[in-house]
Length: 362
Image (cartoon, rainbow, N blue to C red; front, top):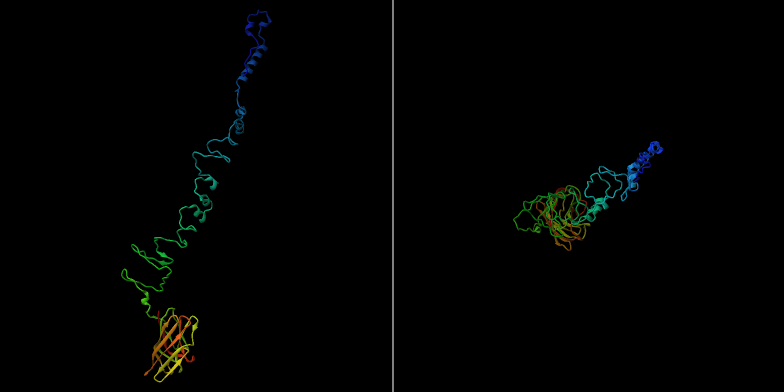
């Protein structure tokens, strides 16, 4: 700050005589005084003790000059105002509040706090495995299950409600029902059936095993043999003849077989009528003896020893108006019986009339 100092003592001039040269005021003296006053005024109008760079900012108030004048600032660049500023890589710290509606690029692994273990990994890569790692109270394992057509592996369903399972329609009872199948057992139903009874009644299905199962009748009007397939477990077999005749004088022959084929040796078999008899080791023989004879009757086979696959036979049939044929035999197979054949002893005579069928009991 500059103090004004007066150079000319104008008051002293008043006491000087009129003819004294010093009494008169000179223009130079007035000019000097005004210049001193102007210099002092100009200097005194300046703000003193301003920090470095402040005067420059006040003269040219730019962001750069403000940054040069300010000390203790953070960051760099342009001066920031409250409304809609653009910040470049700011470190926001912990704001008291904020709305991130339009924010993008937030890293899940480092930008979101408070997540449970493995949740960030699931959010970044939402796989079934990552979901299972993040969830803590799940049941089971494997793939995430959605509602429509999921594939479940050995699930424990608990008390489930369903209308169908694997195309099997289920009618829900009004209150509850129980279907129990023993461990390791299989229930197979091959035809439509209805089981009825009274409560607490048990049925032993083995008691129904003696029911007769009839195969499809076969015409015996051509060919030299007729074959029938028998399901495993048969214990009794009946071969029925209705008007069966041959083109020649050969006798009928019944052969049995297993999965390995028909057996044509090892039979003990004989047959007889009032006019003659015959025997065979190639099958169970039924005497016919004439092309004019026609067989009406049956041959019955019974399993006598399951372990040895041994069968016995007996037969009786009407072959003419006053003639009947009877007989019997024995044969042990190498495995369980699965097929029956009706043929002829000589293998060349052909069937020319009637029909035949086979029935069995398990």
